[in-house]
Image 1 (cartoon, rainbow, N blue to C red):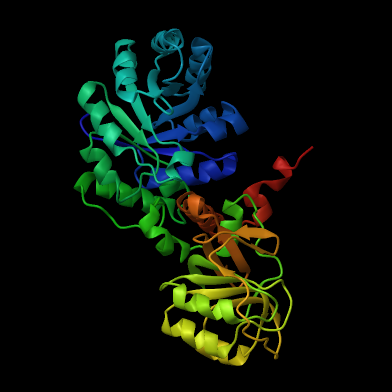
Image 2 (tube, rainbow, N blue to C red):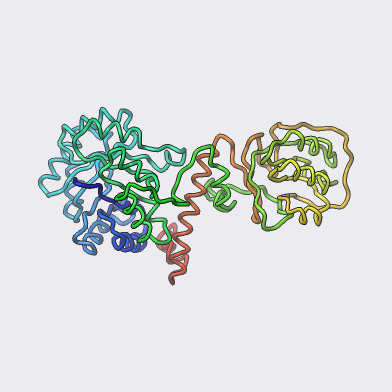
Length: 429
């Protein structure tokens, strides 16, 4: 290969959506079209035939992820029109040899996907000797959500083999430059193109970055680590987060006092008795800038929070308060635009008796909340992300938003949600 090629991974489950993105990507200059594994499983090798029919001059890659019966699967894919066929690196040598042999018979090339291979460098050298044409360094979506990037292992493999190496997993218009500098010859891009509202422009941006070796900034399609959690959570909604947590419920019965403001922060938890506002107020002094005070007051009145506590929180630059109990002085709190969420509103407050505890696990609306958990609130309510899952679920929430952006664009262009999602096809029979 004289220069790196750009391959788009069409990881859809509906053919009509895959073809729409393929057209946009081709007009943007994509080099190879990959029929992703989800598309092959959903539509069969008809998907390969259809893409070959529509784009006869483009290289079609069939991401078969072959693990057994290599000859049969390569033969099927090659006859359907695939020029390059994917076999897993964890497959046996005999399966890979069968793929190579069948590929030679049918004019196809073989790429070995190193996903979940334990010693990638060792296996890459082994499969090169078996006669494969390409090696693919692949970070799975689930690993991407945990912030994993493939560039270090990519660099090591490129030093040890002489055949072209591809890279897949979270590639965008920024880090594509890092991928090429690490030695990648095949740039495999999924979401940064397939989830884009304008797949043509997204393709053009990535190609431009590949040619110039200058990063083009992007707001989306990036997977973050601990340091960028707040930045990404500020972009997504509680609905996005709920979807990312497999439709996890919000804190049932907790409602925003102030509309149009967002709350993001780590929990400082308080357990108190009904109406006893001593520990909630004391928690303000313990909390750090950006924290959210989460109060278990038994879900009943009197109020344990009001205007003066809010003023103290504003001065400390806290991110908000969540009360499984009652709040008062709501007009003043709205004037301060302080993110406050509560089960109840009442005019009467209790007494500061000092019962309760700070920074202990609490039960809010049937959900356990631990100190340090991430608390996010908006007009739809409040969701909780366990601290140990914060990076993963934040990335998954962004993935939900990115997918919705693409669906919204297709609806605006004249479709409907039912048509875009092909609901009738996927209804359980």
